[in-house]
Structures are given as C-alpha cells and as structure tokens.
Image (cartoon, rainbow, N blue to C red; front, side):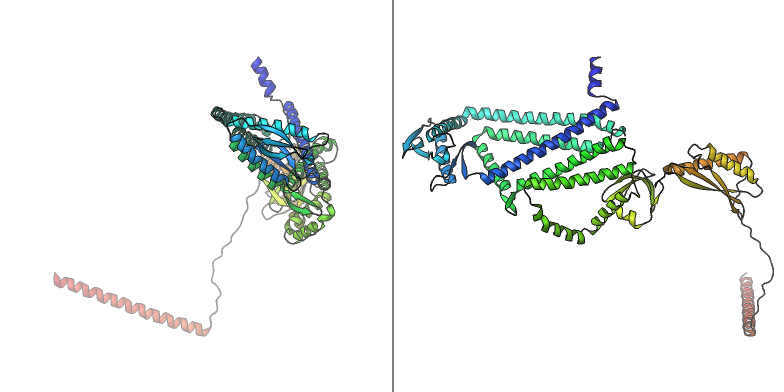
Length: 570
C-alpha cells in the first residue's frame, strides 16, 4: 500500500494533477526570470557606480588569496606598492622558518616589516574612515601572519598528499553525480513527455519541455565540473595562483570598455547582461501573454482569431515598452540611437525587403481579420485549417495532417478561399446522373432522403435537388446540401455518394454508362483527276506491267535451264 501511495503521489496519472504541476512549473520559470532580471540589473548598476566613483587601488595577494587593498601613496602608485609587497611575501612563504611580522614607526607612520624587510607603509589613504593608521596596521599584520603560516603549511609534503587525495575524491564524486543527474533527468522525461504529448488539453509542448530540461541539465553539468575544477585548483598554491591570474585577465577583458555611447562606456559584461535582460524580457512577456490568452481571453465570448490577434498585439507592445524602459534604466539615451535607427531603416529598405514585406503583411492580416485562427482555407493547392498566425508566416494544418508554412504576403497577393469567414456554414454541390426513363420524382425523393439521413448535413437551410440538364446519355441532377464543418467536406461527400448509390439501387434507378455510336457506310469516293495526272498514271502502269512480264519470263528460263542440267547429270 505504501508503494502504491508513493507511486500515486509522485507520478500521478490524472490530468488535473499534471496541469497543476505544469502551471506551478511555469510560474516558477516566470519568477526565476524576474528575479534574474532584478539581480542582473542591480549588479550592473552597482558595477557601473563603483567604476564611476571608485578610487585607484590595487590588491595584495599571496598564493592566489586576496589579503587587502592598498591605495596610491605620494609618488608610489597602488600597483607598484602591491607588486613590491608580493615579492617580499613570496620570499617569506617559501622559507621554512616562521615569518617575523612587526610594526615599526617611521616619520610618525606605521611601517610593516617581514623578516626585517620593509613591506609597506600604512598611510592615511589606506585607512578607512573611523579607523587610525595603527589600528589598520595591526589588522594587516594579523592577516599577513595568518597567510604566511597557511602558505608554509600548504608547501609541506603531508598537505600535498592530502590535497591529491581530496582532488581524486572530488573527481570521482563529480563523475558519480554527473551520471546520477543524467539518469534522473532521463527517467523524469520518460514520465513527463509522453503525458504532455498524449494530453492535448494540457497546453504543454513536449519538444519545449524536453529542450528546457536538457538545457537545464547541461547547465547543471557545466556548473558541477566548473565547481570541481575550482575546488581542485584551490587546493594547491601554484594552481590557485595561476587560476587567480587567469580570472583577473578574463575579468579585465570583460570589464574593459569597448563601446562608447555618448558620455558612457560599456564593457563586454555590460553587453552580455543587457542581452540576458532582453531575453528575460522576451520570456516574461511571452509567459504573461500565454497567461492572458489562457486565463482571461479564453473566458470571453470573442472568437479564437480575435483572441490570437489581441495576444499578438499585447506581446509586441510589452516587448517594445519593456525594451525602451530597459534601455532607459541601463543608462542609454534613446535619442542617441537615432543614427542607428536610420541605418537600420536603410538596411530594411534594401537588404530586408522580404522580411519587412512579410511583417507588414502579418500586421495587415492581424488587424483586418480576414483570416483567423481556426479558419478552413484554400491557398493555391493547399487546403487546411489555420493553426497559427505569426508576424512572418501563417501555419496551415492540411487534411493530410501536414503543417504548411505560408508567407503572409502570399495571403494578400493571391486569392484565398476562406470557407469559415464570418460563418462556417458552406454549401456542397453533388452532381448525380441517372438513365433516361427514370422517374424524376423517385430520383428527387431518393436524393433528399440520402441528404436527410446524413447527420453532418444541416437541416436549415434544407437540402435541395436541381434538375440540371438533359445530357447526351443521362439526366443530370445536382444535390445541394449545407454543412457547418468545411474541413469534413470530402468525408461528407463520400458518405452521401454511398447513401445515394444504395438508395438508387434499391429503387431500381440505373446510373448510365457513357455511350458512343460509330456508323460506317461503304461506297466509292468521288475523286476527279486531271488529264495530265491520268496520263502519267497510265504510263506508270504500263511500265510496271512490262517490267513484271519480263521478270516472269526470265524466271521461267532460269528454271528450265536448271532442270536440263539435272537430267544431263543423271
């Protein structure tokens, strides 16, 4: 019982529980995207304020560990002071003897010495407000002593063996965790994706869910191995120093200004954060639009096409407004982008004519509402139901369950047959031929009976039978019926023809075969020849007769000669 309860609890089969979990999953994504946007905005603004208001400082490190920062002092820059201090600390940490760190007074300033060597002088620029120079020197001495002791300990053989053991264990643990996470992800996908695919009412896209889970798993794997590498490099002093140097180089390359707009400069990390915020904005607006479509617009009485049009307009409006607000918060002057906008306009005019044409066509179709979601249309050789209207194209699900993507401009440039425009009721015309001699009343009643028995044929307007014409070998009728499901018109025609054939056969009404009559008459053809042609033909006849006579005589002579020779031989 406990096993069954756990199975039902963690792997429910009911559609309601699955939809609730999917909605919760979607809400978590929206909240995470909003939180990410807030964090990235705070981080970027704080970094920009620090860059704008910070003073020139340099960090003193030992074996890749950060100790403290020093400022410029007189003619000595912060970088020079930090570089000299690093050299003295490296020499002290490589020694096997305990380091002697002390403070001496020089010109009323505390001077820190390591093993009798001058490390640095603590000045007023190095001291934060509310703290004296002596107090700052005492704090730095304590930090330097602990760092040197730790560095000497990490260079002993016992520590190196322990670090190697921890590194091997961390790699094995990362491999095991990598495999476990992959197995859990695949097991979860096998349970989730088939349910989403088999339940059309959930609104979930199996491909989208699978892509999201795979992307999340890849990020988790990348974070796992990155953390493992960072942990291993932090175990050894040499690798820690190398990784710190590489990190500093990368950070400097990412934070160095590369683009200047107006009075402000932006680095690579600023651009990356801006792009991430924009994609977060697109994700949030898409989620808000989906919630609006599924929660608010669905309960209204407007049609599905109008709902989709409203959702598209709201989506693009939110993206536009959010982009403007995001650029303003980021510190960009919108007026400074006028040149970029003009260049973009020229590019659209020359290089992006096709895309611009499709976008304008999409807007015209959206506002004109001549084609809406759910309409059954015929565009050229394609006939199907409109499943989706996008800014560039229209997706049509054909009768063969194949999605055809049609550019929006084609819907405006060519004729489109919309069977569902304003009203889904449409008329079908079924030609019927019967043999001569059939009772017209029987034929008419038979056709009306077949239309009445079909459940897909509407009662109002009522079916009609038209006597079309007297044909060459048949009486031609037309059965007119009205239907409300244009997508099923071919199935309805087939069912009606089956019923018509059965009823006509039971009432002994014959359906004629095509007939053709061919009459042949013998006689002489009245030909008139000219005298010259008759003379030529007679001469030709005489020549042929003489040649045939000579040929026969020569054959007879040769035969007699052969027979005489045979007799002589005998």
